Amino acid sequence: MEITLTPGALPRRVPVPLYEAIRIGTAENKNDYFDIFLGLDKAMVEKLRARSLDTADTDLQENTSDFKRFGEGSYDDWYSKSRVPFALMHKNTGALAALVWLGPKPLGRKSIKRLSEEELKNEKTVESGGWHTIVFRSYLPFRGQGLMKEFVRATTDVYTHYCPDAKLWAGINRKNLASIALAEKLGHTIDESHSDPTWVAMTRV
Ligand SMILES: CC(C)(COP(=O)(O)OP(=O)(O)OC[C@H]1O[C@@H](n2cnc3c(N)ncnc32)[C@H](O)[C@@H]1OP(=O)(O)O)[C@@H](O)C(=O)NCCC(=O)NCCS
Image 1 (tube, rainbow, N blue to C red):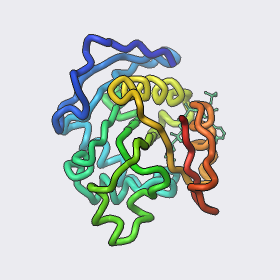
Image 2: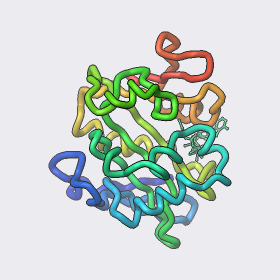
Image 3: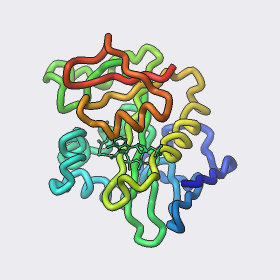
Image 4: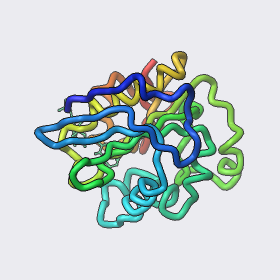
């Protein structure tokens, strides 16, 4: 996929205000065209909610907490944790093709599905120690189409422009070979000391 970013469109700081979506670039993949947004507007959030509630997408349901996070949970609450989301929107259909987000999170901290009640209470106040998580999803029928390596790379570059000292990590189910392969191709390696038998923390420092 070829990505063209518009540096002049980048806001002064991130996160942008809730429900503001700024078009920061375009992408082309095998004659298919996309827009890249920093931030999600309300219509995009509705599309994200529908994707997250899609129980037919077994890969998404098995490998992410999105059903709980965006399907049942509040996007506003999630956004208030300094998350910086990027959306890849398919021009022809208006579909949400892929989502990447980054934000401060201590190395090795599990996603909400795996946290205890006590850990969930501290979710917003916990110190990140300079670590920032990176999270990615592509949605059907755009999954496996070669969109993600460049989309994740470009959005990471934008994020590190704002947080140049960020140390990045991704938390991934050990069985999620697609996600581990993508993270490896982006320069992440497994940090076994922060992983467990079913889940890996993959760092890029
Ligand atoms: C993980 C995920 C984002 C990967 O996206 P994708 O659409 O497959 O990405 P791409 O098609 O761009 O492929 C990215 C790279 O990973 C490789 N890859 C994809 N699936 C793979 C698999 N099952 N095994 C090995 N490598 C794989 C591709 O070959 C590609 O490398 P290349 O560009 O050098 O050829 C996607 O599978 C997904 O959203 N899954 C459901 C939700 C999820 O698991 N999210 C991650 C939670 S941590």
